Length: 150
Image (cartoon, rainbow, N blue to C red; front, side):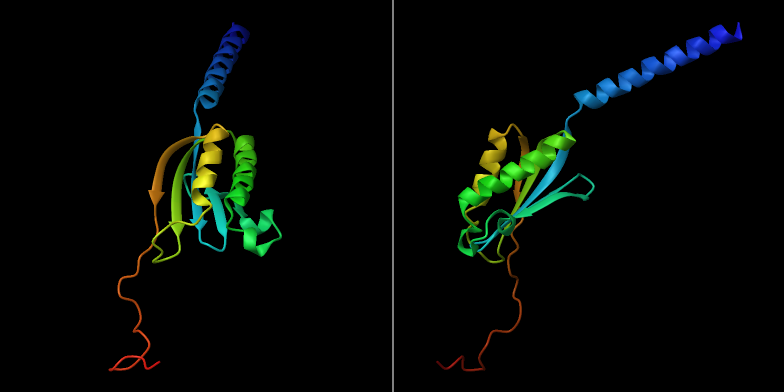
């Protein structure tokens, strides 16, 4: 009698665990992609939703030429490396946060190339947010009361 009850309990646990694995397989994992682009370099930093780093790739890690670090072509290679690292973890959806140099009117040349190539790789972009900082006064400018004499 006890052996039959124990067998039923074990079978019940197996059914529950198989349902849990089906839920995990069906659920898409999400991550945050932080892109920093300037006219000198492109940095891509991928974190999970809690902020732990998954991967960080820069233009200097892809090319040895300093002048090409901010190139859109190099940004495509950065996106391919990101796709490889995220594919291993099963991440399918991304929140994208783009930042450029403080006070810069435009983004660097690599930002759009990274997003475009990641969508081609099959990732779903949930949100794109521009987090560029802008100056609010800042330190006193050079020159005295009558301005800088050139």
